[in-house]
Image (cartoon, rainbow, N blue to C red; front, side, top):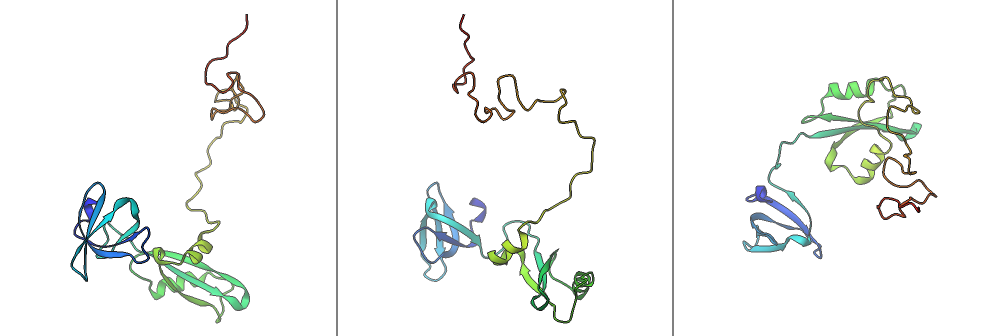
Length: 185
């Protein structure tokens, strides 16, 4: 938290309905010291009671805004599509590019910005990201055969899998103690 000293911040603390807002003045092992804006007094916040915080006066690190442009048409049953763009805002060219490839485009379609990605409601964000894959699959390479003896076997000589556990329904020879099995002579 040392990097936030001198910044205007808001802290949500366990047991308090309203967040504490003020300038972070100092910190130690157990407490954060926050100077109130309105009362000009210093509050001592217990670190273990802090649930969350945010910097109010500036971004603490380099920040790139990600904006969400969305379209939908309830009349034809279209659930809509979202477009995420990096940068300070959308232009008319972005909107035209976004909507031009839609085969169901009609005059009833609504297109508009939802704002920054981090400011979206959790319901909308959940609906937008559920089932989505990010990135590309790697290029196809020559895969090893599953029954190949050159790689690791799925089952070792003691009935254990590569993860180290026993296969379901089998008792490890050491009885689960991690000691080598003793043989009767």
